[in-house]
Image (cartoon, rainbow, N blue to C red; front, side, top):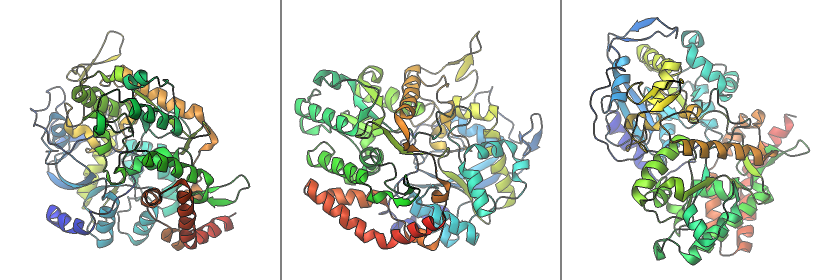
Length: 561
């Protein structure tokens, strides 16, 4: 992919108006730059010519005498940041594996379309992060079938055993390997040994201003129904405890999160196919629970509880109303402990001027039936994919780095930084943070901006260590853990369902055609309606318009038995 930056700008002209629904959520990152740091700590430096062997065995070494330039595409890196030498963490990886990463960026809004353009035009970067999910699975199947992405060698698990072990933990990896007859996509595992539940809950939760809730007499609970969040928003709007007047936003939410909060948390299968109690496949778009979620979203929009232009907000704009401007009474967003350290401990406390530990309450959202609704998250977020013509030495070098990141040593560096510099062990063997209170390890506000966004050789994400890491304040670790636990507590096998792999992985020409962006469709129903009755009318008309695409898929699934 020569002249990548120049060609990328041309390719994206036609794609910038398109958007996507992320398979998980966005990491806490900023598009602003950050000052370059000094050289890597002496205790963490590694010789430029050495790295762990592809075998992953302790004590073995592999020399990297030749410096390689590797194109690497990921979503929303810090604009202009030097991911090779901008901070000691970036320097550690570039020296250890003797590489120079050429960062190719795309936004949350054009992630799917950008990768699609690259793959279909034969212009893939060396390494990319692909937003693999039900909505993009037809693309993935087509690319594997046509050889538009690299098939990993048959012996890759023996050569990179640490990466292979993590691959097996994702559930998705083995399923896709069986379906495609080989491995084309490496799912990045959220959890390894600290899986919070099976099925796996997602991490989005509702943040409300606890100080404002106390002021308006709203009860503090371990979870809220959608309608209860709306009650809180009404009270805050009426009483305006923050004295914000017209600047107050009772519920800050951009379209993706609004869809999840109102519709997903009432209708588990709102965007997919599922088996009903009689074992017959149905389409979640037709569920009365989906209509309920749409009507609640309409009420929040019509009453001015949502931002008046929520449908046009971009990712992070809703978060910034809460954590930076302090004008939002609530926001539905990332609930990982590491995300809380950045968004609450650093950004909210610094910008709003109040200790977030005292002023913010964060809990799961329930449906109107009092149950937690979600499809099994599946233990991954994003997949690593290689260009079909990537040079062997570049592929092997990056795989070596991924394998190292899956070792105890590598993963500890990725999640806690450098021993003696960022943490130490006390007399009892417990890790103790050496960072100033409130300082995150990653993000543009953190010590090592290059850690943020899973930019450097992450096959095993931070979630697994987030409940234990000393670089996150204990309060937020406890809040995050409680949120996961309460999702499991309030879920049932019917409302919080395990993955039906037959439906999830099913592929056919009809299935590929029945693909559209639910976010746009559902938000359009809401914003184009003028009453609750019209929401129902428009929803029914939408169902009628989609059934010619949907019915063939239902027929095929039900024919499978």
